Length: 420
Image 1: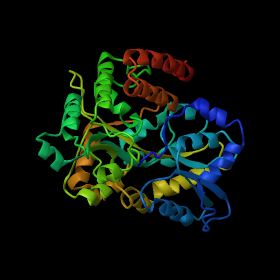
Image 2: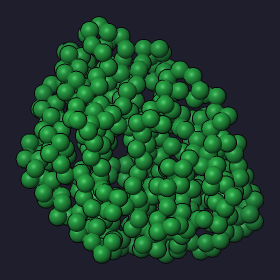
Image 3: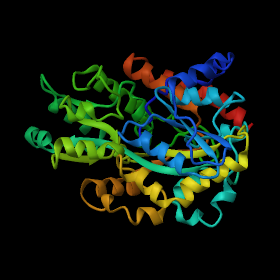
Image 4: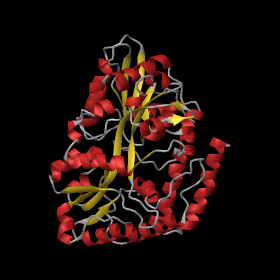
């Protein structure tokens, strides 16, 4: 599911924003508060979502809230800069009781969220093991996975065939393919407006990780430096679509023929198939071509969390359990009726007929064979630091070695704060 908001922010911005209560008013104004669900007991709960792009999702969220009988659940639907608005709200005394986000260790250490082991008791084995692992911090599980969203490259089969090229399996091959596919009307490749969506796959494709198992820096390697230089070559050429009207999560550029290949998520597959039919293929971010290189798919997604500042933590946990553990039909609907997402629960995935054939089945295969999940120790601040590296080294032609050195200093400070 797409993260509509830009991640180009950092925690300092949030803290500055939190300095005034006016920020909270802006939050309500930007979101769509549906008011009470109408079916509850009178006990209020606030639930926050980012604004999903697929038609029907907001109405579905409101329907789920209204169906809950043990509280009056109001849904806040937040367009744009979701992360920034969420973190601002969590610092207040009037934030959401339940919200969706990604697993990050600082939220647990700063006691912004509460463990959910009790509501997962007896059903953990029904969840994808990697989803449970990525939400486990200091031995406790802090979120309930709602959807799994692999991200990969879509390509037009007919355009590659016309250019006489096979789907590339190396970064050099991807750059060469993008150049050959570029015409006066179509760009070869679209990677989003900021390149942030592919920064982790670029690192993983060299064989490197973001952090070592004992939480030391692992992304700064010679292979990553070289991959950044190659991406700079792509950026400086004419094959990359820049200034697109929509971000990478929106398939509009690909569907309208502005590019031959685009990085996007599985959520967009129904829209892409409707636009291009069988003339679509998918592939992972290709290997760097180095000896340890590997294809990489980002296994993103969204998860439900309970705020430690919830007015009634037990009531908030009960709602999360009801919606994301007990109501399998709602979970199936959320995963399959408004876009394609892989259900995190095995029992729900087993009945996902929509994902068992064709391009969707290929997406599930890439999720299982090349997918890499979030590391909860890799925080929002670290994401922003690497986004700066991408911007400076790729867009502005700064020396990637020097940019990574600068990033190392910031991220080491972050790691020291978290792990001592």
